[in-house]
Each structure stands twice: as structure tokens, then as C-alpha cells.
Length: 494
Ligand SMILES: Cc1ncc(COP(=O)(O)O)c(C=O)c1O
Image (cartoon, rainbow, N blue to C red; front, side, top):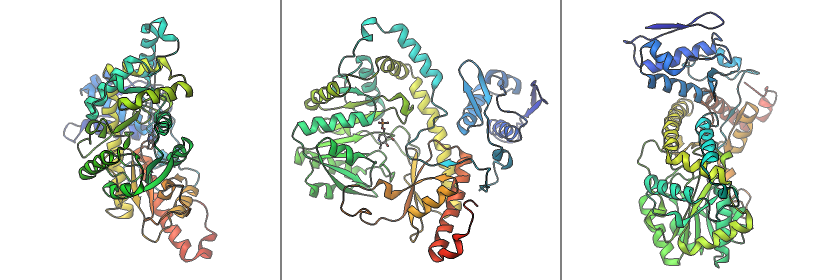
């Protein structure tokens, strides 16, 4: 079956061959090629998914999936009220075949590739759903709700979020235990200040771990101490020795190594908290995205009296929405609310209602399902490209989330490789970037050289070219380490 649709230029032919494999993949390839070859130009409008499905005699879901994939890859863009259009892509994309393996990054033609950790796909944020929810919130919120919010946050959102956390994360908090905040980081700041007022003095942090948490802890008046992370997560033996009674963790998918806290460590951790009358802060930042394994439930569900769970929609929707929550044992809730009252007076009320509506109506879950498939596709491409360019067994932390750890050859300097890659148009952070900043030794204890690859906001094409470039950066750095003079004259890009 083949169709043409009428456009200003020559007609575009899309054909499906029912004997030649997945129909969606065929349509996707043809649209991609047409866009790369500029047979479909930037701004051109595509038929609605319903119309194209009718024309081709395929299910509408097939065409919806094709459009979503191409939206995610940056070939298409969708604007409220004006349908799906061809995005403006650089001419380099036209010159590189989709299935030709590692693409050369040529001077002047490469799209920069940003493997920055922690950025979700900004092109697939469900803006249509969000604008529906904001509009609905403006129509339905009572006038009284336009004043200062209830201090813990919108009751509606607290009910919806805790129901979600019970359903999806096996938690057991209720609205009474929840405080709405403007994202994880604000929640952490309020929580640490409240814990300091409770007399807690020292906090243990994962090393390597998320950036700035040591600075935030010190600012709240706590002494921050590092605890090493190994292949099973945080080392609970070392946590015991640290003398801390508070620990901040990323147990579902450790930042940045990607390991999940093992079941025996989880049990040991909770035993530790009981022994020292301690508190576990659970940063549950990207638990929704898991691929090969069953989701690991929230620690909060295992030990609600010991765990404060902090969540946010920065990874699931977008950082710009800036909403999150703290789910805390009753003895800490009032202190956290008091910090919120003094520090902010509340989170945006209309947006809280919009988020509650998005979650309650299933739109949030639908978005997560869609993103899980998109990220899974990127992760698979990343794994295949790294295997090809670096050999097998080099990537860790792939079972969940949107980042993984690329182990470099032993003698590489991760910093030098990242700096070389930057001159070749690829941005990536060395693992050392996530080392605890408070020790006397600025390099910290040695670790095997590695790069943290965020793959949330790069498309499959960029992953292919980015990994190829990284492999060349490693080679170049090794050459330079052996013979700095011979490589000094090389051009910046290759
Ligand atoms: C480890 C970790 N936790 C939580 C978050 C979310 O923070 P926020 O909600 O303040 O954007 C991030 C964002 O990158 C993160 O890296």
C-alpha cells in the first residue's frame, strides 16, 4: 500500500510492504529519509495520525508511535493547534545515513552532542496535556485558593501524590505526611534545616554522589561526611563507622554510578537507622524509568518511621515545572512546614492543581509509559554503540534512569578525555565531577576513570555520533599522553 499526500512541492510517497517486517518501522524510515533528503522541508505539516493511518490502511496507534518517535528524535515538532510539522534539522543530518553505524563528525556540520547528566527529554514534555491541566485548574479552583496556599501545600496534590507513591513506589504515606515543595532541592534544603533543629549534626553522603549536596548540607548547619558507593550501593559498614545519624541516598538508581541498592544493603541500612535512631533521606529522582528489572520499591514503604522520601517531577515532566514533595514521619512534618513558611510561603497554587489533575486523570502515567519506551530505545542504541566503539562490558547502570557510567581504559585521564571531547563538539562529565568536595585531597581517593553519560535529552542519531566522537577523543588523549608534541598541531575536530 502506498500513499501520496498533496504538498507545495513534489508529492511524497510513503509505501508499506506487508511482507517486509514492522509497518511502523517502515513508515518511520521513509519519513526520516524524506526529511533528511529535504523532500519534506522544515515547517511542512504532516497529515494527522488518523488520516495517515486511513491512507495507509494501518492502525492509528502505529502512526501515533511513529510520530512520537520522530518527535523524540527531533525530526518533527508538534505545536498546540497546528498539528505535527517537520522540524528544522541541520544539513549534516541529510548527509548521514540512519543505519550506517558510527557517523563521522565533520567540521562545521556536526550537531553538538550534550550528554549532560540529569536533563530529561525537553522536546517531549507533554505541553498539550499541561496546558489542558492549567486551563482546567483556572476554571475549577475556588477563589479562596488564589490566596496564600495551605502551608503543607494543596490538599488535592498531596492526596494524589501520596496515592501515586503508594501505587507506583510501594510507599505508605498519606496526605498528612506530605509537604509540597518547589522541586527536590528545595525540599532537601527545608528538610535538612528541620533535621538540624531536631539536634541532628552529621549527615553521610554518597561518594560519588549528586553534586552540591555537601554544600547544601553545610549551609543547613550539618557536618557532611562521605561514604563510599560500590557495586551494591552505599557501603553500610562505612556508614556505621561515620558516626552520622542521617544519610542521603539515591537507592533506586544511584547518582552517578547507576547501581541499585541491593536487597541485603537495604535491610542493613534500615537496621543501621534503628540502631542509631537515624534518618534516611531517600532521593527518588528517576525511579519511574526502569527497563530490564522490576521496579525497586521505595525505602519509605519499608520503614516509614525512619525514611523521608523526596520526589520531584523534574525528571518525569520537566525541571521548569519545579514541583516536588517531601513525605516524612510525623515527628518531622511540622519542622519542615515551618522551614517552608519562613523560606518560601508556598509553591505555585495553580500549578499544584494542574499537576494533581494531570496525575489523577492518567495523563501523567501515559506520558511515563511513552517516555519509558523512548528512553529504552536510546539506552539500547547507547549500549550497542558503546559495545562497538569500546568493546563489551564498559557500561554500567543501564537498568534504569537516563544516565549510565562509561568505564574508560585504565590509563585514560577522564578529565582530559572530557576536555578533548568538548573540542570535538561532545559535552560529557567525568566521574570525578561527582566526588565529595569536602575532603582535604582535591582529587579524592582514586577511582577507575569513567564518564557519566546522560542520555535523556539526546536523540539516537546524536548518541551514535557522540559515542563515535568519544572513542576518537579517548584515542587522541592516549596519543597525546604518549607524545604531546606529535599531536599538538592537530585541528580541534576530526
Ligand atoms: C540526584 C538528583 N535528585 C533530584 C533531582 C531533581 O531536583 P529538582 O527537583 O530540584 O530539579 C536531580 C536533578 O537533576 C538529581 O540529579
